[in-house]
Image (cartoon, rainbow, N blue to C red; front, side, top):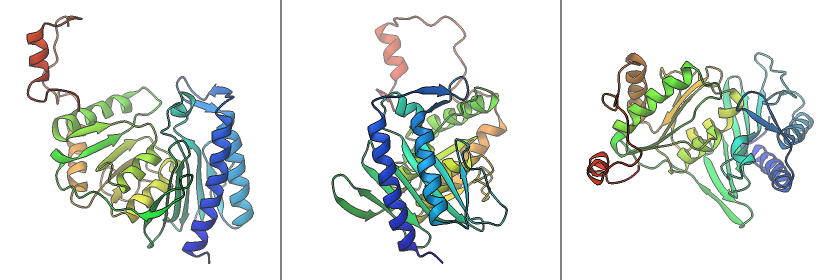
Length: 304
């Protein structure tokens, strides 16, 4: 039986090696598409090859399930690694630093180890079940420090995050309703482009809640454990535990989580109403007058 310390040591060294490969490969990208807006690079494929081969050598009795398809040998009841070689590929292609390598280990339906490494940000998030979550800045040689959620008991003081599917269908439009609910209820909403990092940012107290639909197991397998070990409750939209394969995840602190689920439930129950008020049906001028701008900003006076 592998100990938590052994998990941590192996995963840390593996993602640091893979992270160096990501950093060096940024100079010469060959980008293809899996869909109209879903990108994949040679870096994704190369990093996945490194991760899958290393995991299989170190854990020959485990299954491996990876995003780009080099490993899809999930067996029911068997321990499994879920691998995302580059979560946030679109960010990576555009030079946006919010992208990460994510590896989550699950045993009998329970997460036991997870690592998320953002090489461009020099942030390595790591957790093992029952032993807490930590954040390290390896290049700056800053030692790991434990993570805990930011105390937040009400949506009106919460900073939330979400993401949108590559498929521009009814699920995407439904999430716009959820965002509209959040904009009328929470303090602010962010969209980073990496579910793995969003969950880690929740663990680090930089976000207070996160939700997203149409995710795959490799997107959340590691980040969910890191958030849980920092004190978060992680579930699907119904409050149940089917978030790994169910495609929908909602995460927040224990006090905030029921409110987050309520917000999502409200958006789904009345998808045709306008949470931000009735839509403006007339033409919108390109250059509104000062009085119109003042009215639009109201008391808020800026962006959230």
